[in-house]
Length: 262
Image 1 (cartoon, rainbow, N blue to C red):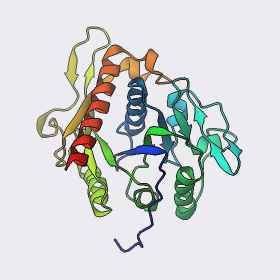
Image 2: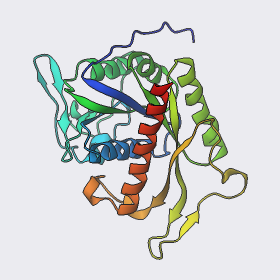
Image 3: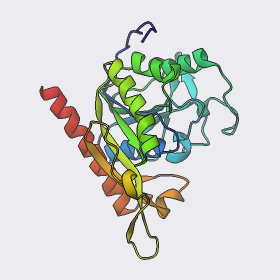
Image 4: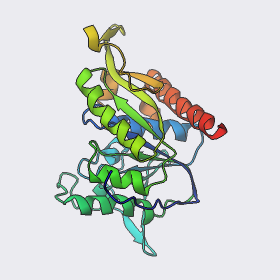
């Protein structure tokens, strides 16, 4: 990369920072980020989530905190706390209406991501989940160069063209010395809402999980109850969805532990 490397700013009060990326929009990245944060919180951890998808923020709506506005205290932004106690920061807390578009050029978008990290009073957290933007442009680059990620979780659907685009984000992570923790294969099947049978959504050569050179942390089928929910509150999720999210959190924790043991 030709861009000058930015200096990562550590936060000693945050134990681990885990990003959720895809490179491709529409593969359920934000849903996976929220489910991961919820699963961490269900394990008794202190959790925050930083919505770095500045032009497409959906984390507040998914966590049921979409009617709040951020406040400042002693020069720091104060995150909004969800019903589950998850600390949340998003650009939607700083605009008058959640449907108002953020029409900024790249440098302003990148600066917003950096400020959400450095200028938010996160407090003591065991895990901070970062919902990263799609693509490999300057906002993603700023996030990878500025935030001290312990690793990234990648989301993909089992389609050849999706794998190709997600692979770009995986390679970008490698070029910025950011660890890839593993892959979530999303919506490779659907669970019939009537009989409960799991039906493959893809067939032929694209039916296998994307081969991106990393372990599969979880497989999450499409479920009508999950797709229809306005909010992904932990107590309101089905047992099957909670199990998938818990498997993902366990896989992330195990991968981080193995990496630290080396």
